[in-house]
Image (cartoon, rainbow, N blue to C red; front, side):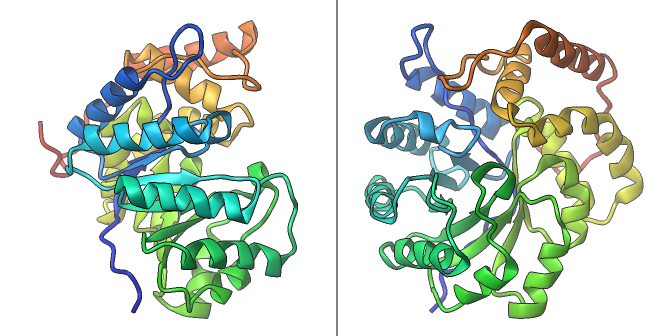
Length: 307
């Protein structure tokens, strides 16, 4: 029996906050999460790419999960990213996530090793069968080098806990190809910010968003407008947002998103090595984008968000 989920809307890929000495700042992370929920996002993904998963120890990952669950307080679903070097390590982390009581896991391919398609499928299958938590399969070939194609996803259709597919390839045709293969077997999520309206038009039910960390109300409004087919209202907002959304597609997306979040007073720009602070010219360019965005920030159409 396939797991039932009600995941839809904007799930920011939440940043993990650090002190000046780059130790984990759980209080600040909790404040970030509470602010996002109060601003109307539909869910949260912690310990993803933007959450600097691979820069955290296992103990720190568990602490972030526990913090997120407490800070969300049951108001929205909390999903935890799992990005490990081996399948057994991923199984161990999935069991920790279940023990903490998060609402699901976002599973990445095994890192470092560029696997063959049947190996990629076996990794997802093994972890999914080791947990009762709902699993979101995460595809991000530019970053993680392993492409979870619709063919691979179709191999997992018999795994009851695999319920959702997040695609960050930027190729929105993947959503159609997946439906043509397995119908509505998987809930589809967009994972790349600068194709969100196109992804919703192709059937995405949700959006794991980077830049919604800085502009959560704008992100949730854009998503809801696209979902409702209100494209005439969505397009001015999308055009305003697009220069910032492009930052989500850069190799240094985490530094860019955290800087934008910092400028908005929602978090800090600090990242752990190997992610280093943006070079002065790069930082100035992002700050200029933000200055223009803040100056021209549009009035938002009513999509039912609480004041």
